[in-house]
Length: 182
Image 1 (cartoon, one colour):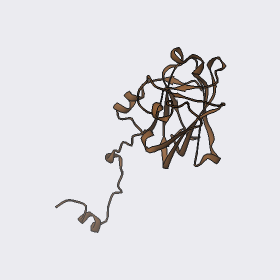
Image 2 (image 1 turned 135 degrees about the horizontal axis):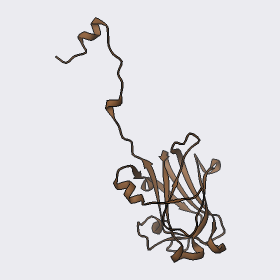
Image 3 (image 1 turned 180 degrees about the vertical axis):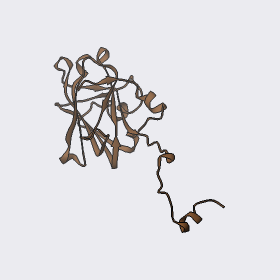
């Protein structure tokens, strides 16, 4: 799959999605001191997570309850990070670490900005999961460690339309007597 460049903040402002990252527990396979989860989630595009160990580099996002996830947004910048920029990413999901299955594999070609990765099940619906794992499989220029500047996790916003609810017609004389407001 080729990733699409979009603006997650616009999607949130329009009310189509909600960012559920704060509801999760975040962990990393490794990080350099001062370049960890706090920098990955600080909403500042100048800071970043930097891994410090062998690939694949992992970002684990665990929810307390099963959560509907529509998409994940990553911010990467090849011009600033060069060989630290992810090139191939696997998105996995499951109920715990021992049953993770691959949802999507994404190839990034010198990304510069937000990259949207939709997460869908076999019925083309947003996934329902306890854990999302982002695995950096390779970097540009065969780089070893990776930089990711931000990650946002979206759930769809439920829009209720009560006029669409169909009630059965009450046709008996007894029911008709109670079907109007007096």
